[in-house]
Length: 93
Image 1 (spheres, rainbow, N blue to C red):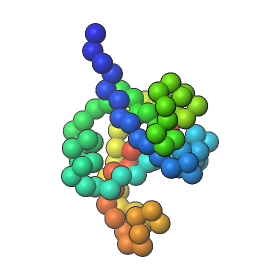
Image 2 (cartoon, rainbow, N blue to C red; image 1 turned 90 degrees about the vertical axis):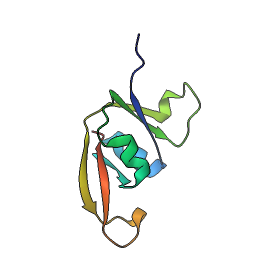
Image 3 (tube, rainbow, N blue to C red; image 1 turned 45 degrees about the vertical axis):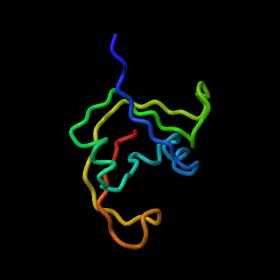
Image 4 (tube, rainbow, N blue to C red; image 1 turned 30 degrees about the vertical axis):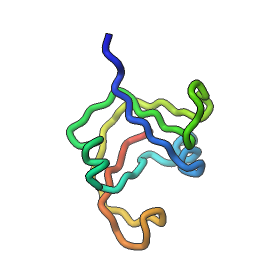
């Protein structure tokens, strides 16, 4: 039996609740070497979107979504500062 390939994304409460409500359809990660290793050319079966770092079994703080891939985007967002940045847009809804 093979283990599912799962991408774990811990989030701040505001972003977690936006995804849960359906108003946020992408989660963004800067295009750094760290995220390139985890996202480029990789396939996952599921994404586990977590409110912070929940205790094991705390399903109220974990959203499970199918892996739908990533897009390369250039955005300006307060979380990343005032300049436009290149990000991986992870499809979460």
